[in-house]
Image 1 (cartoon, one colour):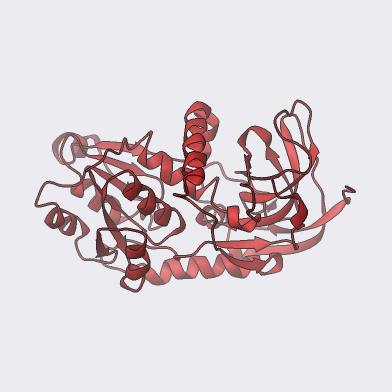
Image 2: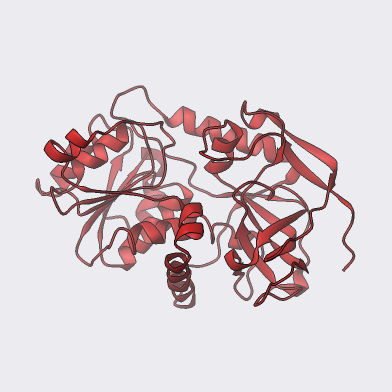
Length: 355
């Protein structure tokens, strides 16, 4: 396949937010380095990380100008030196944590690529290397979920939250899902046992009431801000675990005094990019488990809302605006993201080469 010298891409020109993400038509096509592959992007995922990077609040994130986007799926068109196990023409999905997905071509680390399941389109695979493994890692290797446990899940209508609800039920847990009321029916359809308003005045009290005062065994916390304190208060003393993998609602403080005298819980931080880089063996276990769930029919192809690459800036601004609209000034409110994933399509993918 002939690879052009230039491509269309969305570049972030400042750290003032997605409004400064602009379409350029003459961006040089990158070349894969050692251990990397070049893909012709069929679809790119829109994630809250993209917004965090565009505002400079993602620790260690890229500096402008940079090509936006961290999640890309498409056809492998070139291999860097030392690449094994990935073939030209295969369709894969991977992440590029320093940006590059919002383009017609993107470079991915071969070791971090996952094959797109047989019969799936590129866009149906969005989430396979961001939302899905985040939810799975939070529940299994980090959260140590066990049958019969009670698991509150914040932002349960978001991309990661939906997968977490489905998987927690699959593993035999009782799920308390926090979402805005208009999304309760959709989350209930995923199997949630109890629904609570994510904007409730006291989420911790709701969890304690539903557990007859015992508290939760495992809390999946991604809302941030005051919801973080609610998660700590809702977990069982001594044995309760709180896995934190998002802070859409902002930062919140906890001290060693809190952990000794107020919140005697297991507090676990999760960043999927760091997990991939620092604990590849754990990530490999997570991905193996995920493909087993796909083979068993527990997880299936997604149905994201698809927009053209040129609409990317507006798509990110819409996501950010929804997040802000759903945030409430009450000190115990939490934030819930959109209930459907969104993806950008640089061009129509070729259908004959689905891996």
